[in-house]
Amino acid sequence: MLQTSKSIIRLKFINNNINFIRKCSYSTTVAPTTSTATTAKSSEKLTSFSKKLADGPSLADFINDNTEEMSLEEALEIAEPTIPHSTTTTTKQKGRLPEWLRMKIPSGDNFKKIKGDLRELKLNTVCEEAKCPNISDCWGGGEHQTATATIMLMGDQCTRGCRFCSVKTSRKPKPLDPNEPENSAEAIYRWGLDYVVITSVDRDDLPDSGAEHFADTVRRLKGKNGKILIECLTGDFKGNLDNVATVALSGLDVYAHNIETVEALTDYVRDRRAKYRQSLAVLEHAKKVKPTLLTKSSIMLGLGETDEEVLQALKDLRAIDVDAVTLGQYMRPTRRHMKVHEYVHPDKFKYWEEVGNQLGFKYVASGPLVRSSYKAGEFYLSSILKKRKNEESTITN
Image 1 (tube, rainbow, N blue to C red):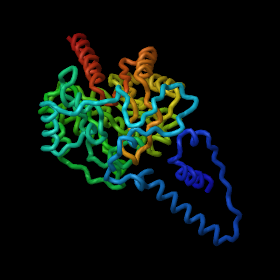
Image 2: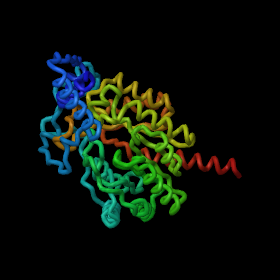
Image 3: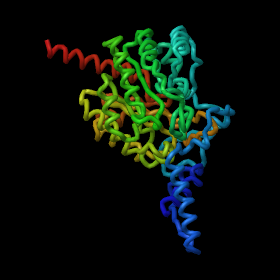
Image 4: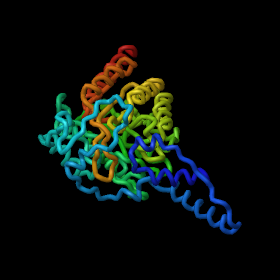
C-alpha cells in the first residue's frame, strides 16, 4: 500500500516544475483501520488501481491522437523556475526563437521524391512524426548531397507516452502490416542510398515488441543491396535482451538506442517503463552479441539537467563502449508536452562536443538542431564502416 500511495502522489505532481520534484521528499501515512471489511474494500480498490497503472501508458489518458496547434508564445515558453544550480546558459524567449534555432522551409527535388515514395508505399518516417527540424537538409540532400530519411516501422502509434515526444500514443495500436518490411526495403532501394536509418515506435503490445519485424526489414534490405549500411534506432524491448540480440544479429551495421536524458530526469521525461539503466543494458548487450557493431545513443539538453549530470551520462555511455553520441536541444512539439527549461547556447554544445571527444567517443555530434538520426553523423559513421570493411577485405586477401 505504501508503494501505491507513492505512485498516486507522483501522478498528482507530475506536471509541477522539475525543481520542485527534485526537492520534494514524499511521505506516506496509512489511515487507521476502522473495520476488517473497510480495510479489505480499500485494499481491493488499490490493487485494481495498481493493475490499471501497470497495464497502460503513463500518459495515454493525457495525450490523444490529435495534436493541438500552439501559438508561437506557447512553443517558446520556458518552464519556471529553471534549475538554480545549473551552469548551462539559459535564454528566455518572448515570441522569438534564438537565431541558432531557426530552420529552413522543406523544399527541393530530393525532398519531393522521398515524400512521394513514402506516400505511395504507405510508409511512416520519424522525420515527420517527431517534427524533426533537419527534415529539409536530410531529405533535400544537404551538405553531402546524399538524401536521408529515417523510416519508422510498425505504424505511427506508440504504446508509450514520453513527455517530450510528438509521436501519437495508443494502448492498442493497429496490427503490424505484413508488407511493411518489403515496402520499406523497396523504398530505400529506390532512393539509392548508401546509409539509412530505420527506427520504430514502441510496441509493448507485441510478444517480442516487434524485434522480428525489425530484423526482417534489415534482412530484406540487405538482400536488395548488400553494400548499404544500416543503422537501427530501437526501443528497449522492455529490457528483453533476447529481442535486442534478434535485431543486433540481423545484419545491421550501427545499433542505436537513446538514453534521451540524464539519469536524474529519466522518470520525469520518459515513459515510466523506460529506465536509464535498462537503456544502458540494451546498448551493452548489442555490442556483446556482435562486437563489430558500432553503438550509438542520444541526449537532449534544455530539460533542466546540470553539467555534472550530463558529464556522468557521457561517462556511463563510454563505460559500456558506446561509439557515437549526439546531443541536441529539446524543443516543445505541442502544448500537451513538457515545456523547455532552457535554450542552450551553441557554445555549450561545442563544449560538450570537446568533452565527448576527450572521453574517447569515435564520433560526437553536438548542436542545437542535432537529432539522434543526424546527417553529418551518418556520413562520418559511413566512412568508419567503409574503412573497416576495406581493412577486413585486405586481411582476407
